Image 1 (tube, rainbow, N blue to C red):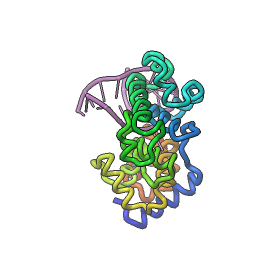
Image 2 (cartoon, chains in turn yellow, green, red; image 1 turned 45 degrees about the vertical axis):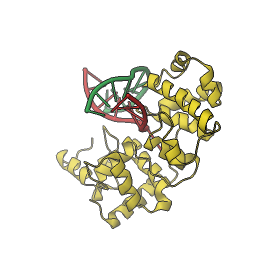
Image 3 (cartoon, chains in turn cyan, orange, brown; image 1 turned 180 degrees about the horizontal axis):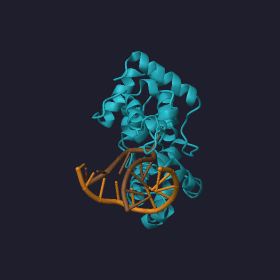
Image 4 (spheres, helix red, strand yellow; image 1 turned 90 degrees about the vertical axis):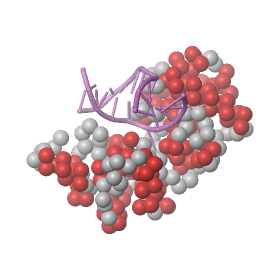
Length: 220
DNA sequence: CTCCCGATAT
DNA sequence: ATATCAGGAG
């Protein structure tokens, strides 16, 4: 496990690598962001961003999603994986927004998580990006990077990873660090081919050093 | 735990 | 061909 000094080193290095890391999902308000994050489950940001500009032109408010049939909405998001569940959740979410939240996305994470298709990770993203609340959304990248580096343990659940990160990172740095960890995981510490040979964190990364030994110094 | 699922990278 | 992608619901 990384000690306090190692954590500080990691935060410093990823700040150098990705000083301006931010949400890459196309959106222009909290409602669009929520839809985009819901769609992004088990899909790449690029795939979602390819779809949402046209989608948001057709569907501007919760009422617009309720005005079409489920089949029509499914067809409109068909290029995204899990599209049938997502279409149903979007419909439920919009109905709930109108019935319980005056048609607006709520700011509290507990309220966000009551919405269909919105779990802890999505709620954290919306609270953080749309409403500037300190939060660390643990997605596949944050989980993988945290475990490889040794910030948390391999067996930790997603919730345990989030709690560990919140404990080890100063609250005012939660949001920026969260985005930098995502960029680091997405573009450098990739799932299939991590660039350990060119990684500034190699000295403190147990998994990276293990990988370099097994490959005898050869890059991926 | 399983299921949902198309697009893209390896 | 297989793994992975800003997960969540049942």
